[in-house]
Image 1 (cartoon, rainbow, N blue to C red):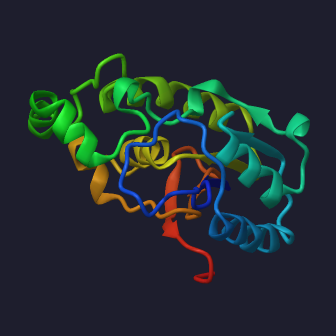
Image 2 (image 1 turned 60 degrees about the horizontal axis):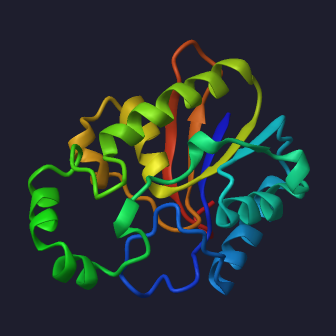
Length: 198
């Protein structure tokens, strides 16, 4: 199985802001979410653990797997979308500072790039080859700890959905997605499973 996990809740999550590659830590709730999955995975042998190198994903991966940072394979391509000049700013700040850009994003959600940032199309092209490589080269039970945007790119492809529908795939903080890698074609078995549902 491939266990695709989103990191736990981050500090300041209540404020609606764009958080891409800004490095923020886990909130108390996020630590609790990771603790839940630690218990869940204590009965599952993990052959490999991969994570984005951002601290919120590394911290989640360490708690869940019980491994040290050195024992986890950090993959730069698994970082969240690069939001450029928008990263870390609130929705309100963006609307006020970049009103024309905000409108452009609304018209082209998947193709729009914030200044110095990536589009969701760019993110998809960055993520899918590395996911394909990880899944092909690592049979058995794999844990991948990544981000909402990254996970949605992977799930869009596996579910054969259009990229425009990416936000129709829910990805709560600390949610687990389960992908069956035992057959020729990867199959999604669970999406957005949150602590307490298993």
